[in-house]
Length: 264
Image (cartoon, rainbow, N blue to C red; front, top):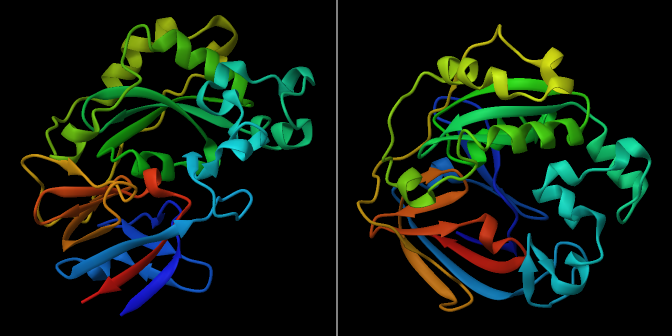
């Protein structure tokens, strides 16, 4: 069965296991149903997610010009502490920035390869945790805007990592930890202006990924270097496809790539 379209990050549905969908303009693939089947992926052209043009992808599925012009790629995306919409200060497009920044945000702890702190919009829970391949996660604070979440993350990452080892995550090289205990340890480091938003009443969320076989070593697929890849799909974790030969395909890293996918 042949599919064709531009790659965007897989959509997910919480379940046991999590359901994954690769969605194209006029079709979609339930990736869970492709497990144990041969998947062929072929790079055809670029298609910038912002302009739709066939131009090399720079970052986040965008071509270089769009990345440096679009409000959807402002510095505050990766560094929430730089958010200024709450001050009515524009970065690239104040209307867009207010729409995204001035809504409830969560600062959380997630455990995928190690315990890490992160920030996401409340509407993106638990999607953000799924995308990171976290097998357990918990909220620390819920704040009304992105700036407060950002300064909280900055304060906490002096005491806990803000990075994930994607190789360890994919190998399932992890240990269960008590995230409630971790949250309590970090409570005193939450900035004073955020202290009233601290969450103490909720428990951990546990996530179950559809993986039949974890790789012992991981080798990343890059369609720009080798435009065709095929293999038996053995698992899906985070935004990665895991193949029988221990190669892994990072869907997020290939956003904006127009591909053909053949399933046998």
